[in-house]
Length: 92
Image (cartoon, rainbow, N blue to C red; front, side):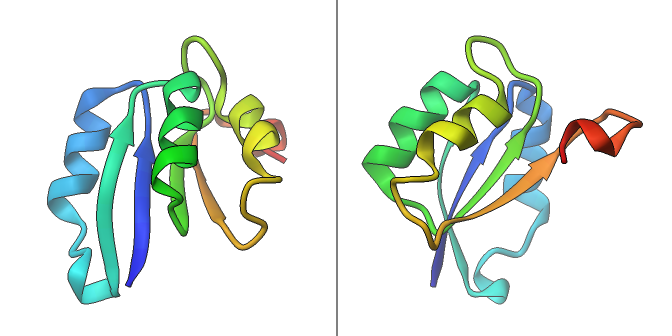
């Protein structure tokens, strides 16, 4: 099973993903959540997820800053970026 960590500053987004996505059916285990990039780094180091689902814009540390910081921890870790921005170039 793949371990999944959700990182988003909006609680209804985190709760929605936890409740709506059939994690076990997808071969995944939801292992935790964080509300900003700073807390995300701490949880990533502690929990070592296989998949991270993260917002881009968050307080304390953006998703992009967080990804840049953690990419050396586990090169096989996959990151899914969420954004409400219309311009995807920002994420690229």
